[in-house]
Image (cartoon, rainbow, N blue to C red; front, side, top):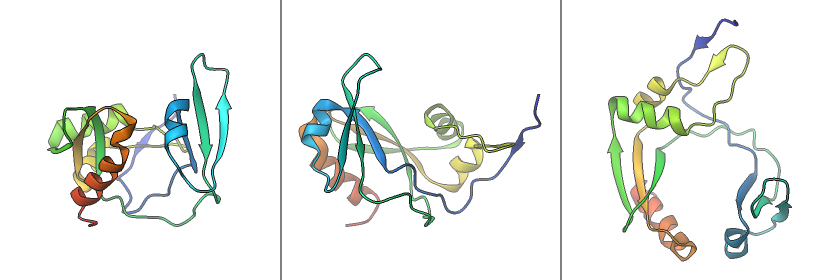
Length: 140
């Protein structure tokens, strides 16, 4: 078994692949400029890939907050702390293994706020969601 070294969360992260994998209904509603829609036919349900304009970004950015999505009646952001924050990150993270480096949820939970983000269902809620997150993060 390979030796696994746990590392601390870096102060910056690289953006992910410039693509969204969403339902066909969502891809019809979301108007993103210069995207290429690629249907996914081999997974048994209707999803599409939206390839975003441009290429991979090599510019790192500091993480501001990690949101864990949950259904709700209204938009609501609730902080998670300690073990609850760590477990939320570990359960929902895309675990990327790079040699012997493994994502360390405990370090991430201490370094960046983790919050549950309750969101009403429905694609018509997307504009309100964007506004809520911008306000919640102090961007507006």
